[in-house]
Image 1 (cartoon, one colour):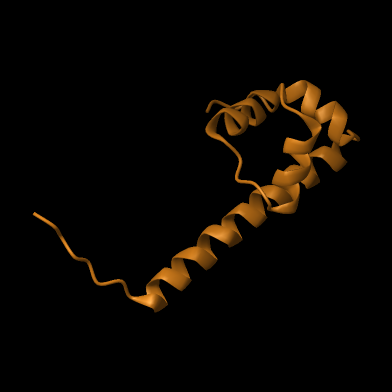
Image 2 (cartoon, helix red, strand yellow):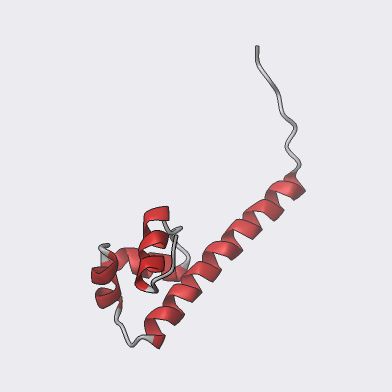
Length: 81
């Protein structure tokens, strides 16, 4: 059986905008954290166990942070994840 779904372009656009906005907020929060602690992208990447380019891409919004990265960030602040 094949199911056909109608896609509402307006809802799709809104969902995409929400996702892009959330990714942008995470990137800005990461940059703010890094700057508040006087860290370079390289230093933060080393603490998180990721490549510098990963930090740069998350900060710029070009990449969504993985759950593992979010957990590592929480651990840096001593917060449960």
